[in-house]
Length: 76
Image 1: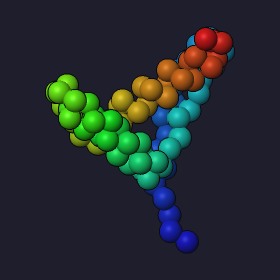
Image 2: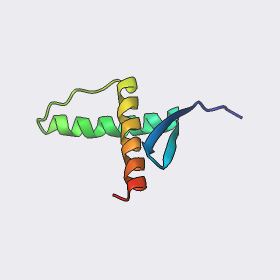
Image 3: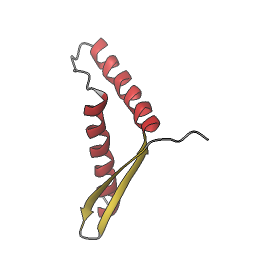
């Protein structure tokens, strides 16, 4: 069986405790490709948006999931 690299990041969302973001490199790469596709579409429409590296996107991805967890915990 092929082993998959699993990334984990523990985040504090509020006074109720912590959450952990778990994702595989494959999940990150799929999200990255979709993100680049949306940026490419925006660039075609005349909006110049620089393309992040995969490592830059990792920060975006984790921040997005952090915000989603925060919204779920805060009931927003």
